[in-house]
Length: 480
Image 1 (cartoon, rainbow, N blue to C red):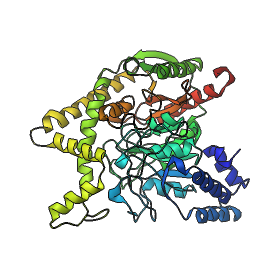
Image 2 (spheres, rainbow, N blue to C red):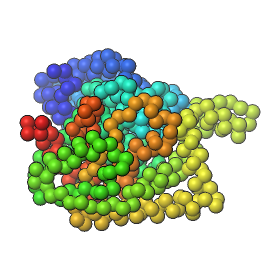
Image 3 (cartoon, rainbow, N blue to C red):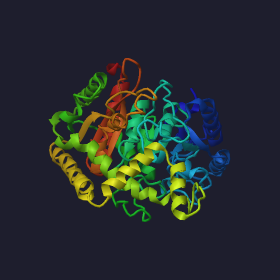
């Protein structure tokens, strides 16, 4: 078994005990990444990785106590700022940009003695559901290289699914951690909005963006979240909440917990195999002692339209800073207006331009009340649906993605069809709730299927308890 087949927790324990060195792990990681370049998972590599690993080994040799992620390689989505390492957000407009600082999550990973091998491929500015909008070419699903790994955190999910790293960080605005995790057969977590600092994350839609972990197992995702979560005064949206203790929650008994199954997430638009697989996962929780109840989230049908008004409006504002003046790509022109236009035309891809135009339109005079203001009101209704459901149940269970991984190019010419790929993940994002995707029984094509659990605000502990129970049931002989 390769070193990188070990989970986050197993690998950290082996490095801390001296059973393997961090340097050995780093070399194995670099070799695995190099051997799978055809998947196009990485956009930049950390040239200091071996030096970082040697420093961890030297500290262990001195008897220093190592952190909870000692020697564990964790990939970083290329929207997360890294000092001395290029951060492009998958866009030509930031090609060659090297931030002068680390994002808060990166600093916390370093403090926990994680190894950071490089930056992963993504849809440009996190705008996409297939990783095909990357300016640097699409990432490929390791289960079938003709298919998408999902997006926008496709490279991070592929890094974990192909065992290049046991874990990675992604960002989730409308499903960009959970959907690629589902399509590649790994675990993906969107924390409660504000649970993890956004300082150093290249912004797409600031009221929705959230950084979270992708990992090969539930416990590994829990440990990474325990490390990166917590109040950060540099992020005004960062919340003050008690530490979640997510890893400890993985050993909790789930008997007596109430699981809500929303009618709106099953039926038309959901692939028959996805429906059957997710219902099997729900049955596993029932056998573990949970109570299953039908619930209704009636405004779910409005989530896609609501999201693509709010998110594009915020994107049009956030991306105004990329103008060729301060940093990033610059196309010189005769006057300032022409410089702005030529730089943005050359630097932004088609989908980013589409969303900027849509967002500018819904914020414009005469349309603000008709679109943006109304979308915010519907967002409140979606959040209230969850609040009402959580008066009866402890968590919501549903599919993560309506289909298994689709073919590269299948939806790239049909934006609406692509947007519908996030139909199951968008409501929790709009409500700011925590959600986790865990692997369910695969389709007959052997393509992975994701099972999603959504919890109350700041109740990641409940989600990890349920996700770990589901994972244990899937691994038991009875489950097969």
